[in-house]
Image (cartoon, rainbow, N blue to C red; front, side, top):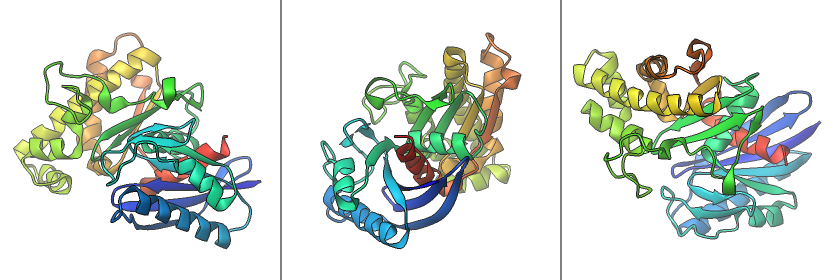
Length: 297
């Protein structure tokens, strides 16, 4: 039996979770606090280290730490490369190394969408699946791939960037610099704009109240997500698709058009056997996944 700490760092909140691994992983405790960004990357890292030290002091037997962060990372080196949604200069920050020095235990870095995927596969809606696509919908569109029951990292740990496949060759410019990325079409602000609402919560409420523009907006964004999901199903044959992130609260408003697009486009496999569902672990998925990642190394 072993215990592992996972931390999930976002631009708004920092969440942590301790899991215990025996035959099956079990969630022991969780915590959340506002991310300290006033001094850029240094205040964020300082807060990360302080939280980890506090959890270690309060919990016996923690053997490793995983840190989940958004953006482009070098997980093998434990170093950040580019994080657009958290203030600071993130190129070359040794997050894993500083954490290991602070707590005296091995530390590992992982992209937050990959952490979500690992958590939902191990303890959530993806349990038992041989292959799975994890999708996170929020400020951006992230993803992760489980192949043969293992998280697939690919070249330089960048595999699974679901949101940065091109859907419309001449579509809107994405924050990554490409045009027509799925993220540019289905991230939170794009959905809100398509629904004619100031934010995603208002868009969901309007659609559920029967507003025609909001219903069309979710249908169109769900269609784009379905096209992207169809590409992954055809390419690698995933048997399960799990959707998470803040926009997953829309539920069937998005899931229905995703399923419809899969039915329309996938011809090489029995797509009725591909299950599309929302995640089960809520806001803790990223922290749980980071802990699981640490426990696997």
